[in-house]
Image (cartoon, rainbow, N blue to C red; front, side):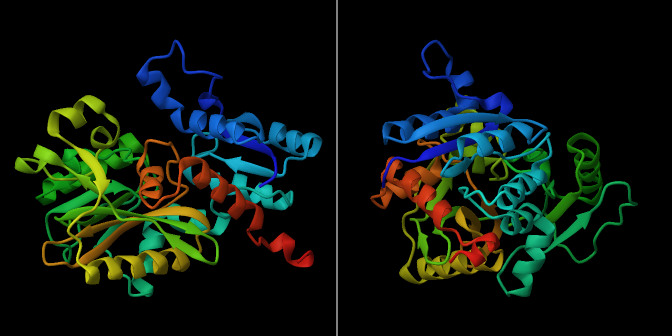
Amino acid sequence: MKSLKILMVVHESLMPPASTEGYSDQQIDEWRTEYDVMTHLRAMGHDVRCLGVLDSLTALRSEIAEWKPDVVFNLLEEFNGVVTYDQHVVAFLELLEQPYTGCNPRGLLLSRDKPLSKQLLHYHRIPTPQFAVFPKGRVVRLPSKLRYPLFVKSATEDASLGIAQASVVETPEQLRDRIAFMHEQVKTDALVEEYIAGRELYIGVLGNDRLTRLPVWEMHFGSMGDNQATIATRRVKWDRRYQAKHGITRSAATELSPALEARLDKLARRIYRSLGLSGYARMDFRVRPDGEIFVLEANANPCLAEAEDYARSALSAGISYPELLQRVVSLGLNYQAEWRAGYV
């Protein structure tokens, strides 16, 4: 691919420096994705500018109008602190007729709203745990049809915000307490679903119309299963010391029967299309010991850091990190947004 003008859009607090020299691992972890994407795109010969966005799109509009980038590499995960507002930034790019990487606004809307996405999956007969939603500000009436243990999480937040061992509840009293925590501390509606014990598997998908399914990845919970629920809390995902203490690792899934892998492949593609996703995404599954599969959620625009699951899964399929970024850029350039209808 020829050299492109790429405008990388990130959260204002995650503007990456030119070098990691002098920074601690903890500091680097904050903007690792942004740094990896920026430095590799530049090493590939692209002209890359980085723009921080917080609560205004004025600078973004000006940069697009004046510099005229070939594509915007979208790494925003929120706008003004609201996770579900990232879809509006992408919609803004479409209104400007500006190509961008990652998922389209409708796919972001459907996948970010977990209750809505679960309803859509249920409509398409895609297996997902039974669930109930408890909106903020309403009287909590406990469900009678859901079976304990139950898992309580935010209906909209991602990155395991608000998820801890206390998120798995065994009694009505614990359930009320955790719903209250979600309302008062995380400040979102609470999504309660039946807890599925089993293997936690992740499947990356890459594409717009034609899809590439990446190798199945697995979270290994190590010694956590001895006396704790095996769930991907924030500490499990991001705390290096906690991971080392419990032997928590993530790697290519092994000992998957051909039939199970074929079912996972089919489900990943169906989910991607059912939610109208584009660019790249990751599907999270639980598989019980008897082989029954449940979809936990779909994650549009998952983490693209070189050392994280999505890129490692791609690498195991023979797709190097620079090649992965190039594919993401190509998919953004070729996505057939509505504004292109009069030009193609």
